Length: 281
Ligand SMILES: [Zn+2]
Image (cartoon, rainbow, N blue to C red; front, side, top):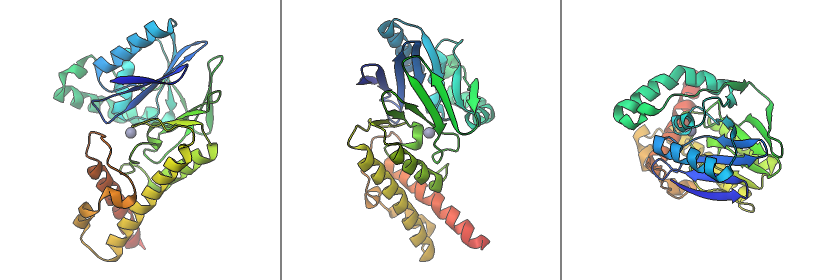
């Protein structure tokens, strides 16, 4: 795990063991707010201890961007009395799949024994939800696409957007929805944040935000084109494996799971959707 400062009061923690997943801590007048946690217990405990010492204050609340386990597990390392804020969909998904996912994780890696699952205790269904932490205002809103429950956390005073997996080094829509992911990226462009913290990968800084978001939108459009052309030409679905990531304008990133595999899963999911639509018409 390594850490860096996004600003005087915003700390970023990145796992070097799982897909460069990010956790963010914001020091406020009312205590530290933590958005997402890293998956591994030792990393999560290290972050909690670091923040206790560094901030010299208590924690204020936890915010969860979506239900994927690489963002959820580490929340257990923070004080139990803290609320977890998230979308109602996130809470529902975790109640459905959380316990079985954790049981599986424990089976393959006993260090997960000490993890206890935290699910959102304060939720919102739609629109915007504000968390007022004195000198920092957090605006939460839906950013679906990667998953339906994903939210963005916008720190108004700093114009920093913590995007969850709506923004990541390789957009992943294989378990989500291609169209809403593009809409979320367009929404973020219109918001004009100064800085974007991605769910996985490096922070996108002022001046790069538009370029990077355009690159991701272009990537997703290319994914759709590739899927459509395989379908239209009646080529074998397996040929999708031969379409390189670079063809859609992105470079391979060390996300742990092979970039190529994620890319292929994206095209396959759009292909299956297009085929189902064609067969239904
Ligand atoms: Zn995710």
